[in-house]
Length: 395
Ligand code: GLV
Ligand code: MN
Ligand code: MN
Image 1 (cartoon, helix red, strand yellow):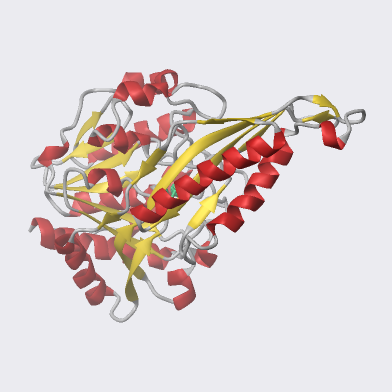
Image 2: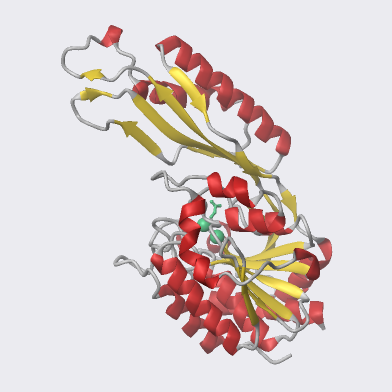
């Protein structure tokens, strides 16, 4: 093992940001299968080859750089949110590449569509067998494009499948994407568990009509239905959730979205996350009951799309121990154990192998925003902890 090269790591990270760089701040626009994502994957594949790794791209576009002995898999994702930060995913891929240069027996991965243009971590879901390719192909993005169409953009790169059984474990380094480490002035978070998540699309349909002539008591206004649903849901959750439970209506399509038309249809995403599967179940029941009650009261029809999700996932004790020991050597007294409120590909990888994760601070706790950033010294500390832990695990 040699020491990782911090300057080369930072230079690679900045170069990757060049694919889909936003005009604002340091952000990127690199959603899965878009031109910037594909170009970034081609560039990463070249870097992997230069590092002596054997490049394999599977049918989903998951990009692997395999070491001669498969060993430990390290990585993350290089697709981004529609308005994404430069480090979310990219950090874990570029750090893995640098560790693979320094530590023999480390393979690298950049999973596809972690950010869920089509679902929830679809690339690693298909790779791990949590979802079959035919089901994934039928998933549609917010514009109605099926994944099966979108993935034609990586067809020229596809070279084979990669059997998860060959790896001894998976480690993912990531930005925290929350305020805890930055607020405490700490450098490293070693993840104990990743929360579970459920997500589905809900449609309320009423009657599209004239906004000037339709009396309020005769309306079947789909947007008013959504508004009432949101208020009733927050109330109904009160006795079920904890301060760590989160839920989000993040994508809304109002039809026909015109000032002078009573909206006839609204389709929205409903996502909820918690560390306990039972609570996720209870929340699901409340969501379904509340939506049905609001629809009945207001003369709306209700359609609920397929439920997607990830189970809460504990990290492996041995891999976690290696990260903790490395954190204590490199950042003594400046690290902590913590949960991950964000979802990660590690959850899918855990179907086949032990997994662990480490976090570096996010300035101001901002992520999924162009303003997302981390001090470069903290990025390098994370790289050093990752490399030290990998060295002990493969050595
Ligand atoms: C992924 O970034 C997520 O947690 O939504
Ligand atoms: Mn991410
Ligand atoms: Mn993300």
